[in-house]
Image (tube, rainbow, N blue to C red; front, top):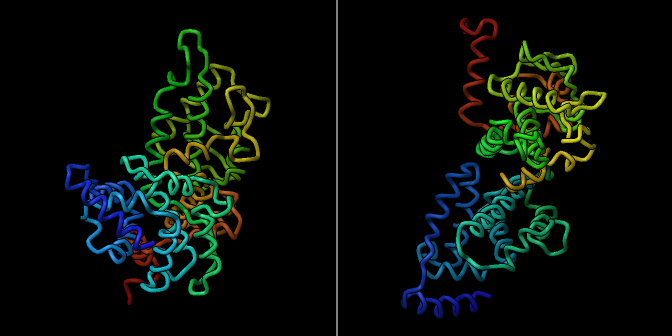
Length: 357
């Protein structure tokens, strides 16, 4: 395989010296890291492998054609290298995150450059259950590797992804006029309305950690537009100001257009039918895929729960509020960062006798 790449380098080196287009890989990497700061280290680890295989490749014009010749085997070997030689990844979850990040990275390259590698891009895009796809092969290695500890659990999204979701959600909820296909006849645009409902649901999940099951059974009677609160499982939860405005906007729209059913569920489609038991009925998975290239509702539930843990709520209270299982809550790992250290120190100073020590 390496011999083939060497021949490609030689051949296309002539092409570049004759005026071909040069791809600025370092710039693409930098742009990706700015958009997804939580993914920066994983991409750096991939680039370490790239440099090892092809000396000075990151600044070489020929890298463009290396990328066009890459296959799943090369990406899998980059994971093996970082696990077995560099020993960067020691747990299955960390290795799984690497596999996910590199997939997202190459999707970013596909969308933002003219790199043409349909075979690789196709394997990355296919459902992971399809045999010999990118994720299927990566996951097979991770699950069988005895050098990796722990079990594979779905991780929550990071802050940068949460901010992207919030930005998208606010765009869908900022103006109810967008929910009409014809403002004069009040004809509802079902796609725009479905997006808005999904956006409201995503925001609820991100701030409170509600499971989809808990979200879909919420009723308008639980919402108090005057107090700007919603009662869930006996807890009266205050909505953030902007979200309160969006919630009132949605309620007014539902009332004005008589989009309701007898049970008065909050989360409904344009015909007033409540969301189904499968998350895909809400559209959340579809929109997540377009925003952060993931269809996992559980990943944003975990983000919401991790924020409640950071705020100091205990597992028992979180379970009652969110409807999450003990296993799901325990799987919401809080990564050590400056926010965690600040929270810990703020709580320590409020303990008894702190200032006597």
